[in-house]
Image (cartoon, rainbow, N blue to C red; front, side, top):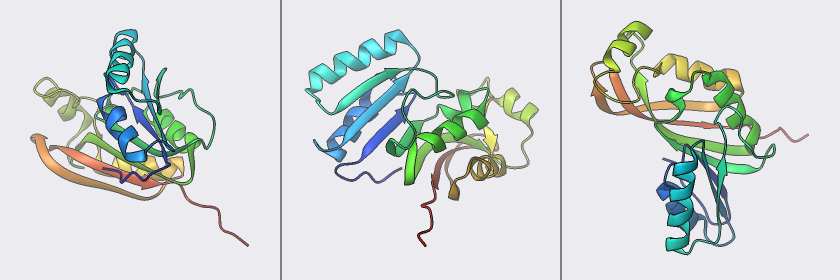
Length: 182
């Protein structure tokens, strides 16, 4: 979802047991750093155990909420996530926090469940009982508008597969603009 390069700092929102963080750590190499953010002590304990098993030295797991990321401004090159943003009840706060922690030129590459534009919030909630991560899904245009409102440029939402009628797994990408040089 996000091409990772050696030396980059990557953050996985809702990292769970840390598998994507550990895979990312390999891609960014010893000069890079991979962070995982999760709110549950149980998942953080599992992630730490997985980190030890993997012998990863460029990995750090953090406890916190995706609406209030415990990292400094402009400290991350790439943000990844797998079906977590739509679980938040305050998506504008999540998008604003993502923007805040990214360096200029940083990028987002997340997977999420996204609704077609004609599927109403009520219909999304009804379909949420069939497949996880659906009730809180944004529509494609809502996601694009939210990313733009947070300050991102070049936002895209690419449907990959149908999760339920009118709802799709999607890859969401965007970039934090680089200030113009004068």
